[in-house]
Structures are given as C-alpha cells and as structure tokens.
Length: 320
Image (cartoon, rainbow, N blue to C red; front, side, top):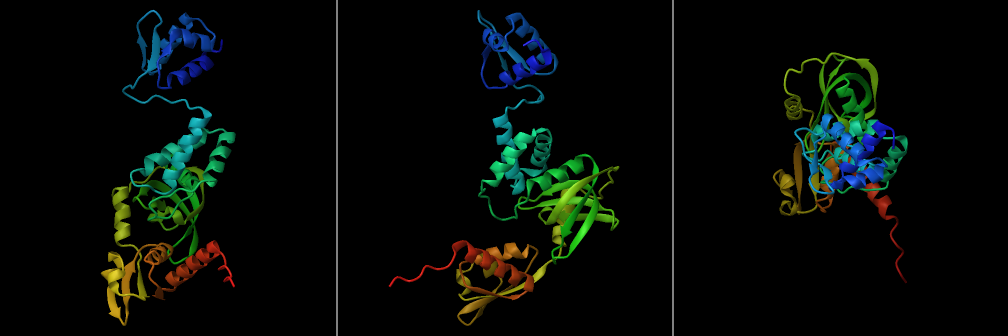
C-alpha cells in the first residue's frame, strides 16, 4: 500500500481494535516493511494518537487511552450499530442521554454514506424499542435537524401543533435542546413573536434549517431553568373522570383526587400532560372509566380504544 494517507487510516483502524498488534503482522497486512510501520506509528503519535510499543524480539503496538479522545475510525457494522443505538436513545428522551447524544448522532449521520443511512433506516423501522413509556417518542431526524441548527447556528423553520390542536408555522433562532427525561424541548427565540419560547419537540413537524446564520442572543436564564419555569406555569386543563370502582383500587396519583360516588368514585384534577398520555394512563388502571371533561381527553380516549380494538380484531364466533 503506497498511498501514505490511506495506509495511515488503515493502520489506525487496525490499532483501534482492543488488542496488541505485532509489527510483523501489521507490515504483512499493509504490504510494507516493518521500518515503514515504525515511521507510520510515529506519524500517528504526532497527530495525537497514543500508540504504545512493547519491547521484545517481535515487538508490538496498541492504542491506549490518552488525555483527549482522538477521532475514531468505524467500519460499516460499527457505524450502523452506533447510529441505531443513538437513534433509539435520542428518540425516547431517555434520562441521562441529554443533548450530547443528539449532537453525536447529528455528527455521525452527517458523514454516513448513503448506503449506511439506508441500512440504519431499515433497521430502525424494523425494530420496536421497549422504553419507560412515560413520554412520547420522537423521530430522531427531527432531533438531529434541530441539533444541527443549534450548532450552526442557523435559523429554523417548522410546523408546530399547540396543546389545543392549533397548527402554526414558526421561524426561530434555536438556542438549546433540553431533555427532562421524558420529553425533549427546544428553547428558541421566536422571530414572529419577538420573544423567547419553549417548544415540545414531539409537536414539531417538518423542521429544516434555512441556511441563514445568526448571532445567538443571550437567554435571560439557564436553558434548563427556562424550561422548568415554563412547565410550572404552562397550560393545564381540568380533568373530570368517573370510575366504576372504589378509590382504593386506583393508583395513588388518582386516589388522592377521588371522591366516592355510589359504588365507584369521581376524580377531578389538573394536568399539563398530553391528552393521549393521560388517556393511556387512565386505561392502564384496568378499571372502567368515563371521561366527563375535557373533550380533548375524551377524544384521545376514543382514539385509543379504536386503536386497541383494531389491533385485536373481531371477537371469534362462539363454538356450537
């Protein structure tokens, strides 16, 4: 292999596997002399790769941990595995993953060849992840588009659906992505409204970076604190639900709001969660219930019931 840059990349790829490589084996694989291998090792060291040599008749080389992480070389299988793993974690806002995983995913997908992008997409669509279930899933492409716009920084356009179902188009200067462990939020300066806003990413659709750069504005508070304040003062709606069983059989989050009514109970509380999520949590009680208000919750419950019925199909005919 006479192309020095290509040879260095191949050598680096070999050294990044967790083993010690005899100099003679490296020379044989790269079809060069042991002396050339020694020179190439020195070049890698000059580039910041901590390559350690072992003494002996044969001698060997291995890559060790250094003070900083140098660029990695991944083969096709490794790149696909990492991209799928990052997509799964980012898409469900797993606690602890935070913005760093989205930045990593954005960088990786930026350089993935088209053939690997297709493999990642196919594998993602063919698998189902079992997560904590306390937050809506998000298309990772939405997250990576937003993360890239934040890093740009570039102005971002997207469609947005508010809690009440109203649709709007937004043009913003994205500032930060914030994860609460169950949801992703975008903190951005809304150019049409002339103020800072928090957007739930699961309600964002068709985001795209406009290419227009901007000088980031200074957010009055920390981005995480800005989101927390918004959640504390955010929109809520009153829930009024009847259950066909006494309060004692309900989970604590419902039982504390329950009042006995006949042989069952009535529960009234305020919620800031999506109607779809509240309907799912009510259904998980396995107790028959009736939604009195609001209509958006009743509609979410009807939609959930329809999906469940469609999933199981018609009841089998009785034998006889």
